[in-house]
Amino acid sequence: MTIVSDALASVDSFLPGLADKLSANSFIDNESEQSQIINWFKLSGGCKLMVKRSYGGRELTPWQGVLVQLGLGIYSPSLAIGAGMHQFSIATLQEMAKTSHGLESLLLEAIAKNDLLVSSAFSEGNTARSILQSQIVAKPSGKGFLITGTKKPCSLAHDMDLLTASVQVEPSDGEPYFAVALIHKENDGVNVESFWNASFLKASQSEAVHLDEVYVPHSMMVNVDEQSAYHAHISGFVWFELLTSASYLGMVYGLVEQADKHKRLSSEDKAAAYIKLDSSALALKAIAYDMNNQTQDTLAQVLACRYQLQEVLAQVMTQIIEKVGGINYIGNAYFSSIAQTIHAFNFHPPAKHSMLTPLASYYDNKPLIMV
Image: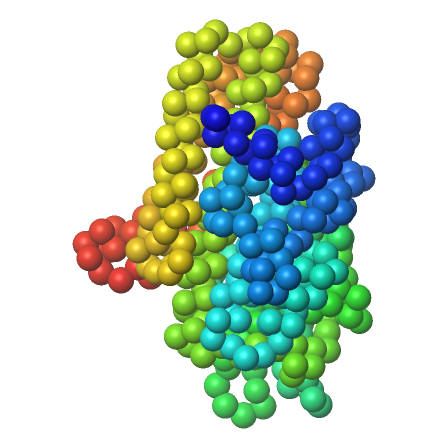
């Protein structure tokens, strides 16, 4: 079985009925702002895929999770991005649950039981600011905190049930410290505003989520000590890069498949593209099979895979689009949309240019410092 066949079979197996719904609609309808793909993902059981069995979930292996993301990327770029955000949020919650005895376990059980969709407000990444320093602030108020800040873009903005947010707690006395807030979308002060003006990935619901003095009780705030916070960030980024890389890789697999269906590729063209894409998928597989204990080494490895993949996908996409030809590019919205979407891979944090110096230090056997 090829990697593409395995990915599509994984979607059929783990998300029953979803592929039929996606295939019954046009690409443009699935990718539109009014699309129902996120809701279909929920209805097909997607919310519990990566949740551990001890919490009532399916507990897919990391490689199975990668295959699902590849398959979703082939079917729908927007769904791959949205689903990847949920799975990354689940992975972060489960990482925190390893060292905490708080609400995370109960929350994970509720997510699996009720098919709750979780979005994330981590790593906002503003120019000249560290992606690890949250711009969302929590101030003590009564038996909880008032949280204020904005996450943009925030995928799943409309359909999310819960938002996990890294916050900087500013106590009335003492130094600020890092924590994670668990916020229900229906809380007063949670507002979604339009932000995504690009013509692609509209169905990922990547809008602006504003938190205006949202009250969060102590029970929904997870305090994380400095060492645990650092490890949670490392683990979170490993998962994020792995799932995001799989999503965009799936999109280019889909591009090759569509170009082949339009009879624009010779057998040599298709084989040459698949050699490059399969090599990248196997690199992700190596990372996925080494996910039991995420370390700086794991992060450096997955970043290397991701940055190399950016170049590979851009190269394959350009070669395939040339074979597709100008008439198909102009006349078929799928091809022009995919071409634009692939470029967005470069903008996910951390950007390559910001990590070259830290990685150079790492390759000189120094600690890897995130920026």
